[in-house]
Length: 219
Image (cartoon, rainbow, N blue to C red):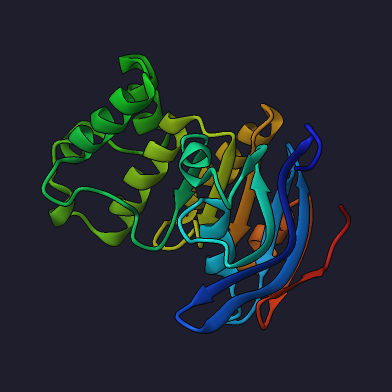
């Protein structure tokens, strides 16, 4: 499905949450190396779109592929190449930040130096690294989750409100990281209500309206 320069291809994709079509015949092509902003009202389907691309929800009808993997039959294979940061952060609350980083570093074969550099970039100093995630603030948890996303070196980055809970320096740093990832060949898709900041970051903008996708910027 699709060509080798495509990171995402959806054609009339339908995702059901119960019997409700959270995505309704959505069609989209995203080329590798793009930074795409997804906007839309709450409940429009932005998070569902990200979760479909991450292989986390099943495709009910239509066609969908990510990085050449058919999401109807190869969701697990696609997940190994995708990094998603959602609202929940995906951290182990009973582990420290350092233990979370080391766990994911071991999963992807990251070196100790890569882990240390990602922690440093996201402002995770030694005391914070040794703090259990359960005792962290929302912003500190977000920084830890973003450091893990850097460690994973995914080909497709999917981020749901990535700037939430971060101070100004953290927001600037994640923007720099996303630009660097795209420059290195990764594809970045960001769902955000912060249209001014995310719009300045993006090379393309789409909007999700009632589960359908509307183009809002140049491809």
